[in-house]
Image 1 (cartoon, rainbow, N blue to C red):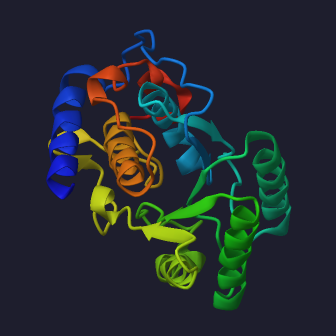
Image 2 (tube, rainbow, N blue to C red; image 1 turned 45 degrees about the vertical axis):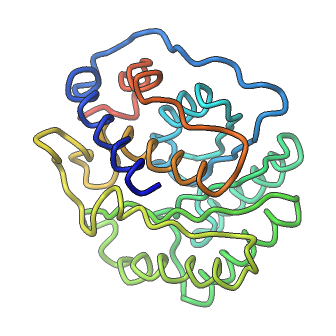
Length: 251
């Protein structure tokens, strides 16, 4: 599976060099509608996750996977500012009831602030909320960010989130897993990769090439852990038009 994943990522990078980077494509999506009984994925997180939701939705559809997103720009976190977390919990509860996902994937938010105990309690609450609804939980660590004045006072909090979600997943009795997105992004923020723009110049968000690499990585991980679908070839979704969306301005 590791070799297959590396091959897939290589294809994505090569494809994006010709088709996606620059966010100039507006081709029609080739995504088909998944069957009614196809596995269901609920995606959640902050504005970074919201930007990734576009390619993930197209790739999920072409892979026979039903997907919905409650990722939120300016929120989406489960720990930290109460006004933001309240909205997240309300949306999650509602979507668990209406969509009945098989898997809930939470990309750790850059707003997941708080003490270590507060953060751990939030992740444990997320685990209980998701599993009580009959779904399994996937924690995905946040991409590394470039520290600026906004985040400077919260980096200690954010840097321990990867450890905390791994610990919560390890203690879940198999009801949750934690995947380290450093496999995609590396250990530190990197603007360009393979000579192409990979992350947003704002130091936080992603560009189309990075978004596609992440999408391929995530779907490959999901397919390896949860039966019911096979990731579609990147050619079927990488040039589907999502790269021209507002999430990638500045790329």
